[in-house]
Image 1 (tube, rainbow, N blue to C red):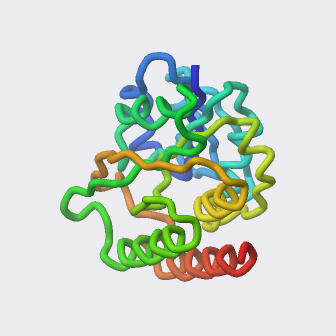
Image 2 (image 1 turned 45 degrees about the horizontal axis):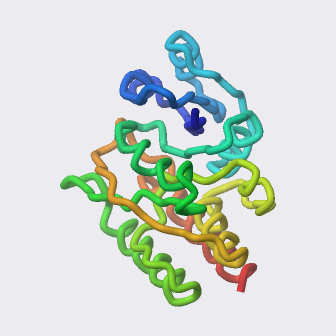
Length: 216
């Protein structure tokens, strides 16, 4: 039974929808990253394992969730209702079957779901990964799956916005089999803490540039 790490910051309006659509056999681990609303309370009431990570940052939340996970296969997915949990079996399946080491969900976006500046930045990063490692990837999105033991062995260090890119870069250096599968992407509930703000966008760009430099 795969574990699903769900980093959450003030996602009270989305967490119920996400947990309600989680497929049978997937255990939710909601990582409350310092919410000021009822995110943790709602998640606990709906049966999720709730982990508190007060140190802000997407990477901090993902790392805390990975530490709390116990399943052989661990998935990561945003908890803002932009990604449909129904896609989890397609993402986790190749890892569970031993056909891939890391599976990325390539977002097929609805109108208005993906800001243009974020889409352009993502395409640039995916191109850098393709050029460097030869992976046929088009998206470095947040929905992904890998084996827990292998992820821990990567020794990921970023605790902010560089976490998703660092995972792919270190997987490439380790010779992992990395593939992607298409997943639907819809407008999120509320405003994004990263691409929805100037400060978040600047921080994400800085963090990801650091990863490209440090794993050169």
